[in-house]
Image 1: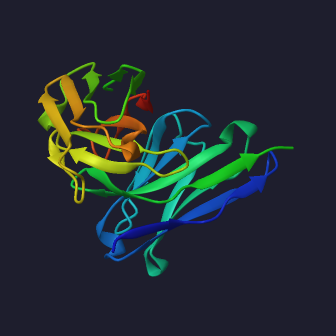
Image 2 (image 1 turned 45 degrees about the vertical axis):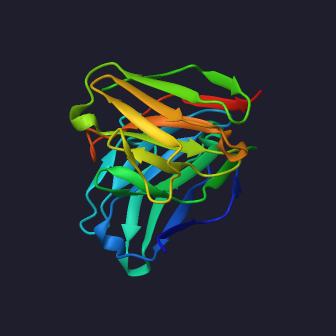
Length: 117
Length: 110
């Protein structure tokens, strides 16, 4: 069974750094792009960016470029989303999703990030 | 960048009724590369439909996607209790350079 399992909820202070993860199983990890999607409280889905684990080719939504960094480590079948300096406005739920044939076929369970002083 | 508009914002219907959800694109969606995802409260989204009309694995046949060009529809033929959720359309015609979601339609129990 194809699965994406994300790291647990995080509570951070403004200015702190953070990296959350998305681990794939049940398939050859390097074969499929992994996307990250943000969902602010009570709001819709926003595509943030996507990475190819095979060659680390990464595309960002211009709204998020420079605000976050997406990376991957094929050796542990994981993709990452990281912030160097969190803001309160980064609070939200973050989902990873596997892309196949251009669309998102499988979603992770989500990671809740809370940034508060 | 394609902008997706979904209507209505909220649809209140009793179980057993037919639900019709609309997704309109600001320009033609190339290849009809349009997907629908369902999200229940507290859960991750789930892929229902891709390519405008193909059901994803395990999706019941009461879910039907249709449309082309700029106008797309998701129809739920007879609402089951587990179908009350938010539905998002998604354009993936620029994959992997870009993806756009619509704002969602909430289907509530009446």
